[in-house]
Structures are given as structure tokens and as C-alpha cells.
Image (tube, rainbow, N blue to C red; front, side, top):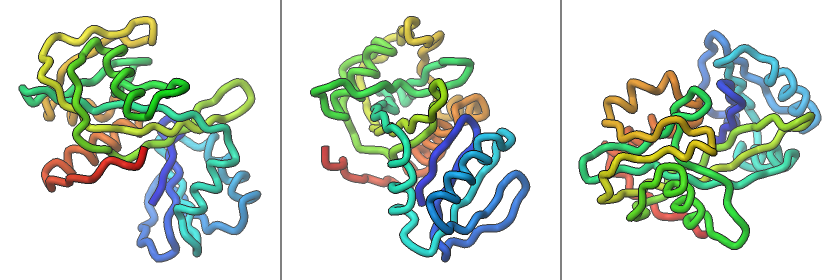
Length: 217
């Protein structure tokens, strides 16, 4: 299953065998061709906040998702979900939403290098160590008269740095703080949708001791 967000809305690509129960503020659409999917996307952009569009296809849903995002300009970014030795987690506050430190990959650097650089630049927290890769997220960005897809690679990181974070204000970050797990979960309604989803998945996976390997980079 692949999904992509636009503000608080999401498109979810599923196979024909996936069980889906009809619910309020969501639609299940059976894929026919890419042209019709792009028409569905235009309607999706005008849908109410919190809306979910399920794209159900007979073929590989991952392949369809890949073909769909190729219709848009793609930007790659990297970021980190950082915890310290006091079991606190590093979050930032930007554009009136809780977020995780992340940013665009620069020319010549790997996605891991970009993730560690962005965390340090946006929070002034260093001494970072990569633990494992987390699921990538995708979201649309409206720019002038076009839509851009941002693909963000995420990594779990740890640090022995327990200093108070310093927000990078020139990147519109107004707060950078260490939060307990309970505090993180209590703020999900104030997070960007993709960040709330990643946070949910991360804390669920932690209890299952999921030790996924780093991707090829």
C-alpha cells in the first residue's frame, strides 16, 4: 500500500484484494486509466479536509503509484526522528503544526548525509547516529500553477546530546523541543498528516522491535 498526502487529505493506492469498509469522508475508486486518475486527482484537491481517496487497481498498486507520481516534478528530502538517552523525542513547530526536522537533499550528498545535516541545522542537536530507516512519506506541494511531489526519506536517529534544541527561525521554525512519547501522541491532531502517520507507525513498530535494514543509498 502506498499513499500520498495533500494538506490533510490522502490518496491511498490499494490492490483489488484489499478489504475496505465504506466510511464517511472517503471514496473508493476503481482504477481505469491514468487520464481518469488525473481527473480524480483534481477532484481530490477540492475535497474536504480529512478526505481519503482509495485508488483500487487490479494490477500492482505500487507500480501504479510509481507511474502516478512520475506525472509530477519530484523533490527529494530527508529527515530524522531523533531520541536521546532520556527517552525524549525531537520535534519542531512550523507553520502552526508539529513537524520533524527535514529538508531537501543538496547536490552531491547522500540521503543519510542530508537527513543528519537537516536535523542539526534545524535544531542545533548533533552527535547523531543512524539506527534504522523508517518508511518514506510523500506529499504534494502547490507551487504557482503546478503541483510538486516531495518524497521524504526518514531515519530513526539517537544522540547523547540532551541540550535544549535551538529552532532555525529562518526556516519558519518557532519551537524545537524534546517530547516524551505521551506528549508526542497527544499532539498528533496538531501535526501535518504525514508526520502524524509516521509517528503512529514508529511507536507501534517500536513495541514490536522492528529492526528493518537501511535501504540502498
